[in-house]
Image (cartoon, rainbow, N blue to C red; front, side, top):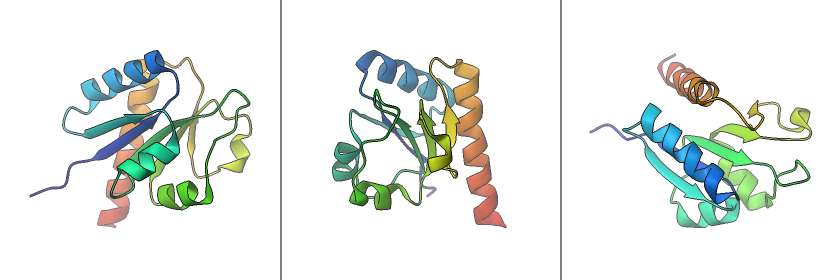
Length: 121
């Protein structure tokens, strides 16, 4: 039995979260998708870190993240939305809202492909 891809979206805006979730359901219908309004809630609700985490910056362009949250996502592939200082998170893929469905889909599929290659090679 193959483990399903776990994708987590952390977005405060309910409408944006719904749009992102719909895009992901269309692109990755087999994935386990969870949506939260804050990272701490995602961490406490989950047993393991997601394979892919999408997180939106707050109004200041920073991320509300405790040391426990940072440790929890350290093994996840991360897509960050609207970060003011992208250089602070060099291993993350960065997108700015609004983005096209194709941009999000391409970003997620690229991360997944890279993760699969790492496991195989």
